[in-house]
Image 1: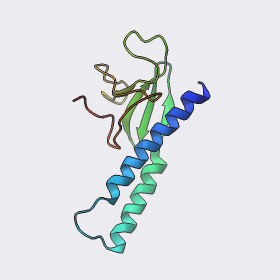
Image 2: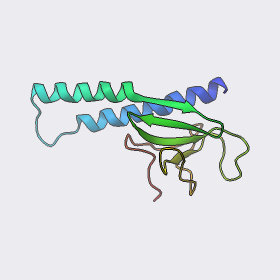
Image 3: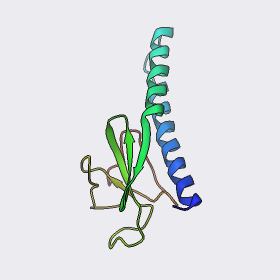
Length: 118
């Protein structure tokens, strides 16, 4: 795996963490110190739990005990380019209907998973 590709994966993980952090700061009412401490703990646990595993065809992005998304990890896919972000269809496989972006160029991500297609 090239350094550029690995760096793009790390940036993707950081974008997911950032979206989670932004979600945790949005409130409709003021929070107590205890509530802020709980959110801070949740954010630390989320950040600690996000990681990826590298397979032959895909890189699996995992948040806690859930699959967040898959990233195409081959140059020989007949439908997708290396770096394309795919929504998870389940634990072991991506949804191969459409790319949600490419980690080497433009993409939008959410902490809950790869965005749905509009």
